Length: 205
Image 1 (cartoon, one colour):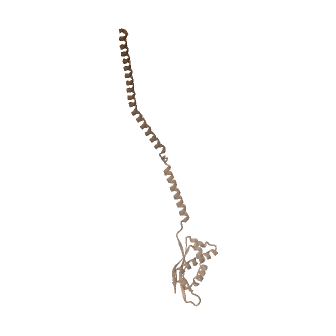
Image 2 (cartoon, rainbow, N blue to C red):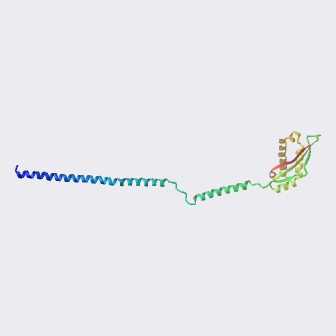
Image 3 (cartoon, rainbow, N blue to C red):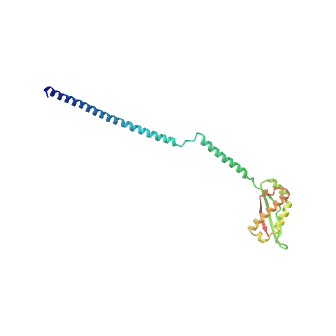
């Protein structure tokens, strides 16, 4: 090998090493650049993920949140319900409302002999009939003679065991009511309008 060739070889090696050093520097710089880029992009990715999650949560909340009633709907519904209740209450009151009780007193009181033939027992009883309409009491007054006749017959047919007990007296009141209604019905009136009969005095001798 000549001295000139020997000189060229070290020069070529030096050039090759220099080029290799440059390439290594470029690769290192590229790697460093890539690493710094990745590091700089990471916070942005995290922020974007948080924003997406937050947006998704808010979207879900508004999607499943119960819709508020439109303004005026609830008050209108409440008013309608209150009106319906009031209407029902008014109608029921009208249907069930009764007038004040009115009384017709049979005067004088009834005095009858009871206990069968030959008995010396006497019953004195004051009777009052109750209704809520004056016209039926006016009719009862007109028919009082017929009513008194039938009541006298009823009272005189009783016995001691009936008249001395509370149950017997209550039973007699019911029978007296039936007698009054029967007479009124026979005269074409509504006997059912006489609602009750009361004994305001009851004396046995």
